[in-house]
Length: 469
Image (cartoon, rainbow, N blue to C red):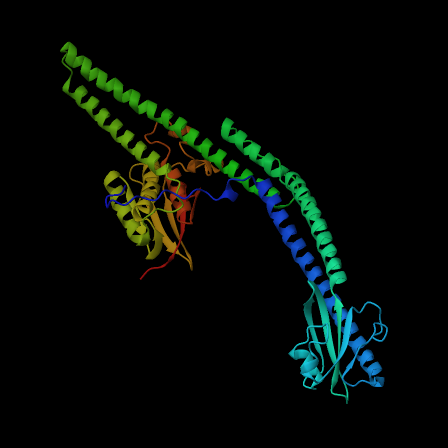
């Protein structure tokens, strides 16, 4: 019951056709299609045969009636002339009469005369054809005029033979139609079973993958829709496997990177706790150094956790985007790095460039590029920052005066947790440039490493957009 006192309707159950197997649905649809086709063909055949027989009978009766009318011209009695079947031109005529234009003779005839026949005798109609009942039997009755006499010939023939033929035709059509439906059902079941065998194999493979979590690719045979489905599923498995490998590698690398600062942090804290517990006096300078190490390690852990959180985001674009001026982002990042590296000189030249994206992510990427240059540049060196643009792409270059990046390492520097041999002892998590690449790809851009004309490293970030005001 809802708050208003009315009963909440239950969810409607799934349709019956969704509770059936795919093979049974294919078989049922095939049977229905064939059954409708057979029914339409049988009904059409029956109706066409009935109309053809009716038209042939009517034409035959009209011809016989006209022949009988010519024979009646020799009659001596102009009021009523009883004709024989031979005079009508056939021996299967059951009843026949000549009727003059006199209503008093209507009860003399054995045929149920009516207005249509009298209209023919009076010359109001050319011919009359209708079905009548005589003694519980149906007859086809035809009336034609006898020109110049004011009389008409009426002939009636039983429809029993025709009805018996149509009945046999109907039962024969129904029997063969039912046999055809049964054969179609069997054929549909066979086709469904054989045609859906690849689907069953695919289903079994998917169930095995779901049960065992083994992302082995499926075999692909042929080039039909099922082959395309298998290929698409293999691509999904490959993407899922790559994502799982990245997650495992991220967890492993993160655990490895977190172990060192956590161990050092725990060692320093244990020293302070042990000194307080044993009431041992620590030199104030040493105590200050321990506290400074703890603060530095805490900052390193905070930065590492932030980097890991940024890398764990898999969405192609940030949920909050807008138009931002890349030159303003560069200026804000330069101000931040100047406070972090006061011993470096930053030479900056920018031009306005509008980018559609997330300002915090872009600022983080630019800051990481500048932090990398500040870390590798010697004291008193200059970091050159240039933002230029073409028609559709802006190029941000950051040059330092450090030792540079070896050609074989220029692709690896953007991998997660990758660090060169000479940088093992330097602070950092090895995630900064990896974040730069991820942000660039999320904004349809790219980043690469080159050699700086000053001998150090040059990092190039390219982003699409349009010139700013």
